[in-house]
Image (tube, rainbow, N blue to C red):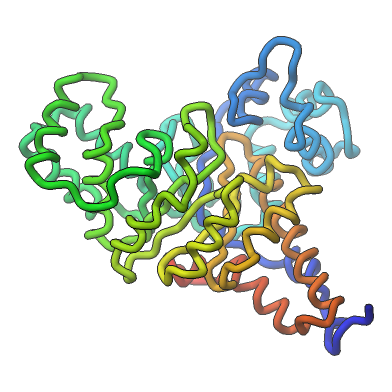
Length: 381
């Protein structure tokens, strides 16, 4: 089919290559050199591979060798041994800088709630990337930290609310999907029930893993009252989840109860990207991304996953995230996969004559930058 008028201007792919993204959900990267077992453990949600198996033989592992190797001055498709040898020779700081700068982000919103003391801080990460680094506070981690500091059970809720309010964070995040599933009671718990649950939880002693449904609800409703954007892990994750309990449709009654002034962001979503798309379509304060899914499904399926997520999602409701954790390669691959998948989708519509090139470029900037800037109240460049 012929292209519609105006589509011969700057191509969508070229535009996206130059677009400095806002990565609205990511994590720090390791500060230290990695041997092969350490590197492979960060290549998968499964951790270290079993004997006889390597995570280099996955869509993500092959993508590292294809797309990250040239950033280390290697030809595409080196052996894993050649890749890791070159990585070690360059050193962790040089590799981190190259990968993060290649991702082309203007802002990184960093969840510091998991192994944060082992990773680069938001400020350090931003400096390495040439981007602004801002923090996302994990609700469950704040509670666990307070318990570990010996806060009295009778003062716990008040101290928790004060700590959240004082945090210099652009958003909060819940991992309820991991701890209790998303099929929790959607209503705020009674104060007496919360107090009893706090006392019982703290009597269990360290380690203070917060997996009580009443307490999870209390944390969430405290966050709702605070009014900052709330992120939810949805769908694919490590073996700690029960996948059927991470379907975002289970959050429907909770989302209906949350005031419209509080943005709720559904992260990653695979294999429930269509359910998340429906929620974003019918509830005005719900947004989504397909985050880590694009890395793990590989380039050949990334377009399909993003297309499904965009089937009914208003274009003002889709955001970009990498969910990169530990390896700086995941920042580069996340951005690369997103840019390519979105460009292919947009260009297909231009070629079919459904959209103008002007509209496609405008929507690309919305999804990659402007939607996140609006939700989190960030400046853009």
